[in-house]
Image (tube, rainbow, N blue to C red; front, side, top):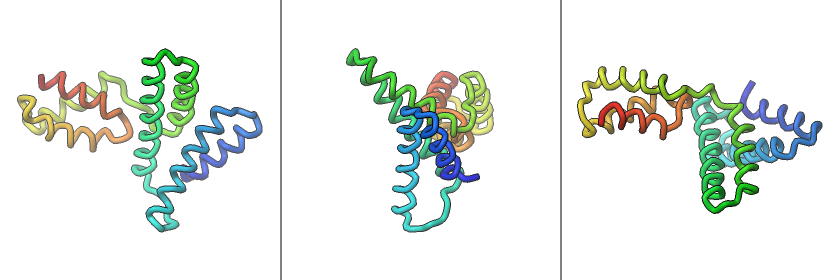
Length: 149
């Protein structure tokens, strides 16, 4: 089942249960999917990697918005954003914890032979490709900096 079909099924459920947050989140995903499909001018489905990148982008946008709202003392606006993060995240693969990310990054550092922060670019490139969809870019970056620094 494609992401678009899953979204439509969840939207129907959200409409029946009158879950406004879920419905708003699912409509945002659907909207982004339609935008991408019309930009590429093809009716073909997105690849799984493209779907994951799209979902991660939506999660990051909402987390960033929530952080800004919290900094401004507007928890009333931050809470709905974080609720949307939860809804959107259910379509992402299970995220790795920090220890698992460090273990993978350590293996990549051994493979590449990286010794200092000068090699961060090489390590980040491989780590980002290998952990795509499984870990946040910020978590990967922190692990690389910690292990190389």
